[in-house]
Image 1: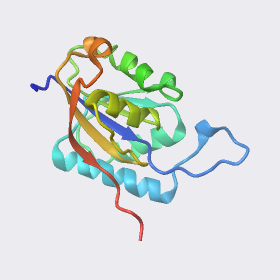
Image 2 (image 1 turned 180 degrees about the horizontal axis):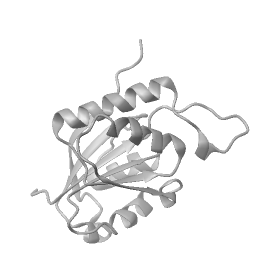
Image 3 (image 1 turned 90 degrees about the horizontal axis):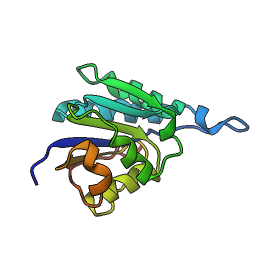
Image 4 (image 1 turned 180 degrees about the vertical axis):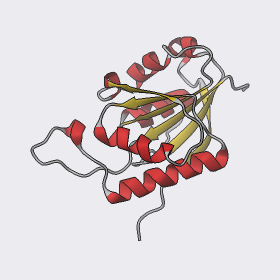
Amino acid sequence: MTAQRQLIVMRHAKAGELPGGPDVERALRPRGRRNASAAGRWLAERGFLPDLVLCSHARRARQTWQYVTAELSGDPAVINDRRLYDAGAADLVEILAETQPQVRSVMYVGHNPAAADLAETLTGGPVALPTAAIAVIELATAWAGLAEQAESAGELVASWTPQPES
């Protein structure tokens, strides 16, 4: 496969509970902040730098990106998109298809099961995405054509999962 585009799929880092509060306002736990920073270092060390970040508007996703980006060089465009909060994999594919053609690398920071389902749809196989995990997928299609060719349109080229706490 000749890669035209790169998609970095990241599930938000570990968040705490918010009893009685709205789910969208759950914040990262200390472990989540550490794992998000480690994820950013992993991306930077391997040169996986997005041109565009599509981030759920949920507090935990925005905080995850905040800790990731602190470890990266560059200044990608960031869109905090409300549609990503409740999106399923098919919705994510449609949203990705809206990406401008000049964008080569997109990073999605969001939620499961959509993140894992998206990675599985694009690669044709299961991809484990516990909190703060990353899947890097190379795509051989333009963003606009992704909706029609999503099934096995990509190849998993790298992944990262945080180390368990001791």
